[in-house]
Image (cartoon, rainbow, N blue to C red; front, side):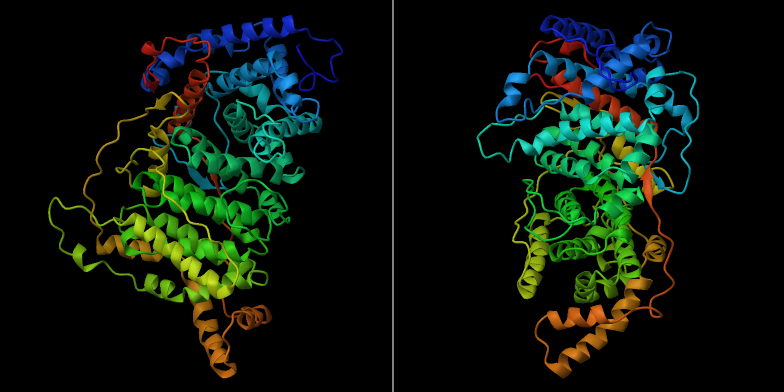
Length: 600
């Protein structure tokens, strides 16, 4: 065993020389090369004929398997990239040990990812999001991966705490390196993508880990670096894989009640995020970052599934947030206004799902957290026309007689509409005398088209998007799962619209608007109210008990495994490993078929 901590009690007393570090590094590099057969297979070949080396290596019959697992886990999560805790200390402590940790994380990602028979657990389409109440009991596949089994059996509190602290330490270096007083005094690690993928495997494999992290540990410590990576990836097209991985992690975490409740803790950090200044809680950090990513994804049809997943995160946490900051309220309502436009709703058969999540989020807040969210209620009242238009939504006249070969109207003036939404929010900010002045810019989040042939449109769309996002994952490779096709002509019908309107949860918010709207207008006329302070004071003093319908059950959605997402993670992981191995090339890039390699 190379290091103690996980699987081995206590700390090993033997000192390790630089020669031993180098020897272990070369051993792991050799193992990675032997297990790299998936790189040279197409996705179809990988699923039909899994790698024989990986199958043998993970079947539990190889000597010292448990020792290797304990060594890799302990090395990865006990590593301290900060060094001696002094400025520039990381530069002196890094070197062969950091290279060994890098390869250890890659090895763990490779063996944890290998699950060749996942397609047998569900149909070929599967689902991405499911209701949390449905129990998730993965069926036993024919192949037994001993590494996944050992990962699932980690249950000691001390080991889980060590893993959690290690992941927080590794991921936090990304934003800590950008907020130092001395230039370049703190180094960020280069293997943050591998650390995030391993966190993903821990959350989806080990229920004991997820439960303890959510119930006992400070999940805000992991949320902050994840949202920082999410925003960083949104601004870098070559990190599109990181963008989706961070979104998956947030989706799983948001399905835990304790995670959402802990977001109410005040935020006093100084992380360099491109969000407005505010005074609030960690829920505001998450909301403002997600708003920025979603608003930049809405104009792109290819990004509908990504936006829908992030809206699911907001919907999951909404019943538990006691008070949103003013800036968050303005951003959420401007987002709802954009998703309520006919041009967006009628853009495809699926885009209304995002609107449904936003409406459900508003319902959760006014039914479960009305007392503390007077500002959001006031923002809802200011947008009451939007809700009335949704209740009377009809097909646009130019759609009643479609021309053959024509395309559905979309948010063609996307730049103009995005700025219009921001101008609306800024106008509200000026009227309320405190708010963001952020000017958002559009960047493309490269993904490919969604599946369109299954009756269950919502779930199949998200699965196809996960299985066919082919954008650059890191510096070199681009994931290619399927070949994007030009979407076929789709024209909404009255029957489709009637079905959509029945699904829109408008009853509660319309009760709120119809009850409070006229009363507030009467108070404003009677007392000549010109500011919003008196209105918010009235909202805080009133109650909606007996006016709103009976609170609906809280629906929490979480991740559902499928063969599409499994293949996507495999391609993404190997793309990262290949692109980060170019300093000393280990693979013949001309023979690689799992991902697309750019020769430039």
